[in-house]
Length: 427
Image 1: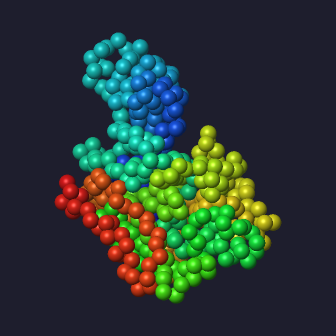
Image 2: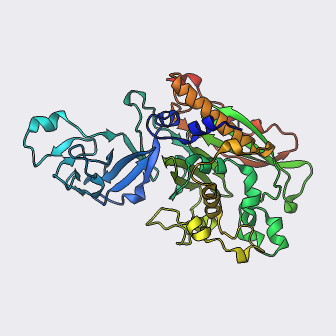
Image 3: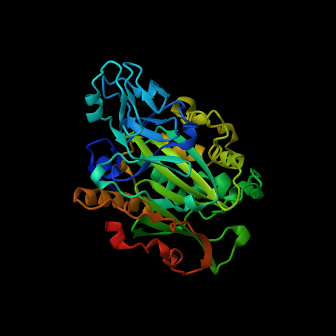
């Protein structure tokens, strides 16, 4: 259990907060490449860690991230013109390049002024369908990190904006014990079979009929990882074997979730204290069927989400579009992993008071992420590098899901999660 003071530290990400200062030591995704489809397209008004930005693609296809408000009279650049190599403020025509260079000041002919001043611009890397930026201290900028998703030949990138605190979403994603229950109709086939709700062959996700797995967690250089050990489902029952599912938590907000023929790299990036951007990269060695993924997540229903508008629209105002009439055959009255996950986070309210919880052994992974975060925040306050930020190659980090003989030490399944050069990490 965390105290009220610790909870405040964990959830507040704005400038000047302890978590905010820690978060600013990492690169974060701020948009998808698809949101800026071509040179001189419409700019994006973006929020990250409680600050406002404009994101735009110039005439050569380069992406810029600038403070949203024009440095002249503070009008928003997000309604500006994007053309001829820059973005122009509508108010007085001041024009800026992606690196903040002032290209034009029509109401001020002083060239020297333009040469000695620049707009605040932030480093940008566009990679594997995501646009990343770094908004922390320039002298502490870490290298850009690569992940297994970057190596895969097939990827699908999805952004879903949820009006919930980032930690509520991340904790949900790191809580394997909820999968067999909240996602009953996709994961716990024995329940669906009893009610003839679904054909178990319809979904190829790993069955997790055991709702009470045995958990263990271990710190790693990139954050931590944990295991959930389950009895095998009825169709594969074997007293000599156990299923072990390992989930890595990649700090500051990431995780990898194992799928049947694809994996999911997910980031719960904070817009501010009460809203987040969930970035999902589905990656595989095989072609990915977007329609199947959308259906599995439940985002094929435009009441909830659409490609043109990433805002998750279910809320208490519409009772999350829950269909209670179907709950004899459908555990939640919802359909799809994202519908269910987002609804749980939203149902908790904007900020969860974790000091009021009653935790059990199944919450080991959640307890670990909180303690690890608080320790990581303290490391930064003590002048140390941000946890895992200086390990540029994280492509070995994975999420094994395997059947092993009972009694197998789960840590031997993913020993590569510890094999990072500590000296390299500190540079």
